[in-house]
Image 1: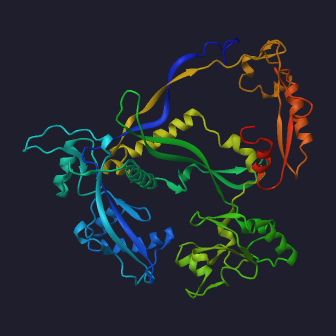
Image 2 (image 1 turned 60 degrees about the vertical axis):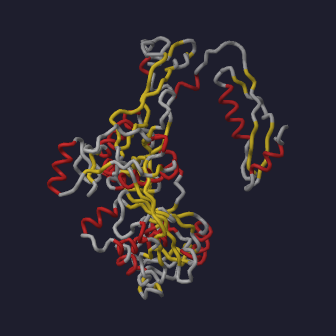
Image 3 (image 1 turned 135 degrees about the vertical axis):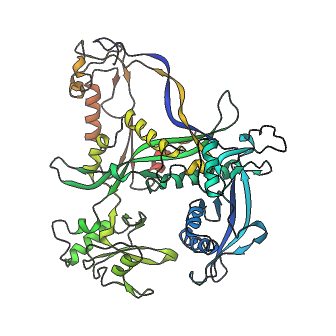
Length: 536
């Protein structure tokens, strides 16, 4: 309830506790990981700056290193390898990349245009010094173990399950090594967040920093029921961090989860260009139409539906379609390229135009208009966001519980269920609680009448007639208006002023603002800074 009468004063007010979206995680006794440093050079022996190119060469090189393993062993180990550009992490030592074998070139360049990757060194790390808990004393006949298997990516709830697995597979439990060098905080957090990212991606789609369940998609529609070209998903943002409590000074590993709304555009540039026409029948745009489309789209940001990458539009090629525009180096059309290299079959391969965008090494590449979407949201979509993208506390709690279930060992038998525990990172059951104080909602009347209880959740339409209690004194505001040369601000200011003053509240806006600052389309801050000099 809101408090203050009308049967709503039973709401608890005062000190209490509240659940957070942070969950405590612990490390197994044998937690460790390996960091390999690498160098990426091209055929001219120069450093390769492109992260995407480095990743591509690294994938080819690591396959070459692991080729002697069985396919199952190779794929299992690759899930525990996290590429970072100039380094990569692994939860286990990689056969063939032992310290005494390094430095080692891991690809010969035949598949990479003579670009190569050289593994320079390796270091085994444990938890940071401040997180280490001394191991219990053990006699020479005792061995301290955790509930992980050292031979595969599996973790177990108890010792009997672990021993049964080791007996069946001829593996052994992970053992404790006190001689491991402690990691610094940045290196440790980089590793555990790489592991978290991999664990989440085993169960959910990754887009940017968010993970979303494809089954949660909802196509947004206008009041007529027409689609707006946008699908809204419930997305999860996750991150590991270190925090120190007031009582316990040892840093604790915290997993923070948050529910967000993720919008994925489904209306392509081709749909926009062919509004009202069938894209199956390629349309010849007039010179005026071409000029208008270039004026609107060149320089804007678009998103590829195939690999979710963002590009800035360089030009629109109206003379070609994916079937007619060739890729000279590969001697194939763009239609063939997307079918063979991207495993994506175009719906309209013979429909113009093509979108030119910047590629690698200052080159220009071309994308079919049907696979790219505009980055800017339609105003009609923005109007729906406050309603569609708002989540209740129960929605957030359900999302947190869902993610927590498949990050804990033994909670689910499906893919990804024990990935983090197998790396020595165990998510605890309970969420952290923090002190909180529930404040009473301000008392409000309508013409000296309490708001009826049945209007408690829908009193917005009565606001224009509301009178706020709060004493007879008034506060005269001194508003400052920062306005652009392209807009008329007076009408907007007058409307806001009349609306606030009409509430008969304590606050009053003057007939004219205290100060108005005119700014141009660029460098707004310079004009504002002139009015408010430092120290003035």
